[in-house]
Structures are given as structure tokens and as C-alpha cells.
Length: 378
Ligand code: ADP
Image 1 (tube, rainbow, N blue to C red):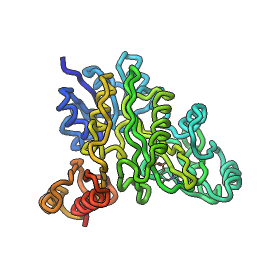
Image 2: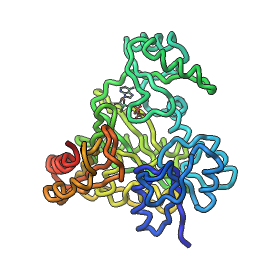
Image 3: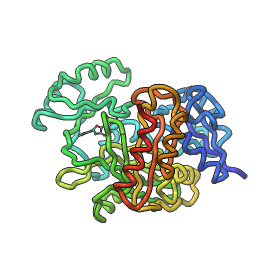
């Protein structure tokens, strides 16, 4: 009997689960938000993921429900669980990826290293935290942020007045998250897979490079990472996966501070941009691993295939035409680079694809990935 996985959300993460699903003999179905999305080639339904009946009807024909994003509301998830649907990651874990305030509180209980933080409900409370931190802090909307939207460096409480006003209009009420402005030397990410019956596997910790709050490049493993860094990052990832009961892939975004501590920035409970390198650079890609994990199958080996992998995002794409029109030049010049496209129309700032190169010489690998990716930009 073939196993069926239902993915809620039709973005590029769902799209990149399609190839490994075919290889594994898993039937992948997608509930897409609209026609023509990245994962539309596997879409069996188009509908609103905020509507419990729509998601439940989609879930009836699959063995497990998983996600392309973390925006499915808790009441919809509860409906699925009440109806006996297997949901991975489950709502009790997913809420910590949906709400950064809940995440901070829970990570504190687990004793995880993280920036100093507070929940603030007024401009005055925010100002008090800023004063405590020497005049600057990072304020965040707890829900719905991505790619740096919903993150603001402030030096006065009034700079978040508009966000407090929006919260006041929200029937759920609520607070903003404020954090110390971390003096980090670089950003890292740790991927961990966990299956419901408990097995966990940690990928090597990677370095992520952000530009304008968006991930631009990932180097795997993180350069200059000694064994201690690898171990500490993996321990944090595994402790969070187990402590929160995560099932499927977990990405833990980390800051490495100038005094060599690791602090948890945020969590994603799904395949993540920082793990795309694994498609070409690891024995088991994060997309295959996610499918194995949510189906409670034995996990694959997360080891790297080569010394280095570098993944470069194609942000925006060409001003005119499609990515495909640039294939010929990119492929001719860089035959070893692996090109991945998301079936999206180019638009400034949009993630439309990525390029990965692997090999034993980091400078050469980084050059190949960057140069091949540049063919898709103007
Ligand atoms: P998003 O949910 O939009 O990805 P993040 O919380 O990951 O938001 O923040 C986006 C970026 O902002 C981070 O990658 C980091 O560069 C910067 N940032 C976030 N929190 C802090 C902090 N406490 N100190 C310093 N920089 C931060």
C-alpha cells in the first residue's frame, strides 16, 4: 500500500518534497492556496488553509498532514487532531514556531541559551527594557513575521507605537516581544529531524548569510567550526526537538556571539532555506528526511557527501523573462552547479530559486555557486 502525505501550502518547500516523494514511492498531495503555485504540479486541492472544513476534507484521503509553512491556525489543527488525523508537526509543537513569545517562554523553561527578552504591552514597558539594555533593542511582532518583516531595531519605545496600536485592535489582544540587540559575529542554523517514535538525526551546523533580513547564502558546514561548535549546536537542536516534541524537520536559527556563545534566534518546524544545501550535499536531503520523519519511517543519514556545500538564493530573478531563459549560459559556464527553480514569476526580492555547488575547496565551491546564481539576475 502506498503511503500518502498531504502538505498544506503550495510554496517551494512543498514543491521540493515532490521529487523525494516520487523516489520513495510516497504519494504527495498538496492543498495549495491558489492555482499556479510552486507546488501546483502535485496540487490535488486549492483552498483556504484557515478554513477547518477545507483542510479536513483534504486530510481525509491522506495518512499524515504536514506543512509548507507555519500559518495554519491552531483551531484548524485542533479540528484535524479531534478527527483522528495524524498531524506532524503536531499543534502542541507547532505553536512554538507560530508565536515567538510562546517560544521564548518555553525555551527559557528548557534552559536553552537565548537573548535577554521580555513581553511588553505598552510603549513605557518597551522603553524600560530599552533603558535596561543600554539604549537599543530589537522589537518583534510575535506572530506572522518572515524574512525580517516584523523585526525592528529601536532606540525608543515610541518607535513601535504603530505595532502597539495594531495589537490593540486585535481581538486576541497581546504583547510584543523585545530582545537585547545581540552582538553576533555570524548567524548559524542547526537542522534536526525527529520521528514520532523518537529517533533523531542532526545535520552539521551551517552558516547563514542574510542580506536585508533575507537569507542570501548558506555554507555547510559552518566554516571555522570546531568540534565543540558542532556538538553544542547539535545538542541545542536535539534538546529543542525533544523538549518541544517536534516531529519532522526542525531548523534552529542561532546567533554566534563575539564571545563564542550560541543563542537561539528562532525556530522553523519544516524544511528550511538553511537546509536546501542538503539536496545536493548530504546523503539524505531535508525534504526526504521530512517525509521519512512525518511518516515515522527510519531516518536517513544526514552526513555531508563532500567537504563543502554552498547554496546561493536567487532573489528576484531576471528583470525580464523567466529563469529558464538563463539556463543555457549558467549551465554552460557552471556544469557542476545544481540549479533549482520554484516555478515562480520573477519579482524584486522574491525567492525564485537557488543554486548549490559542492566540493572540497570552499573558495572554489563558493565561486561556482555565486557565479552560477548570478546568471539569473540582471
Ligand atoms: P523573521 O521571523 O522575519 O525571520 P528573525 O527573528 O529571524 O525574523 O529576525 C530577522 C533577522 O533580524 C535575523 O536574521 C537577524 O539578522 C536580525 N535579528 C533578529 N533578532 C535579533 C537580535 N535579538 N539581535 C540582533 N539581531 C537580530
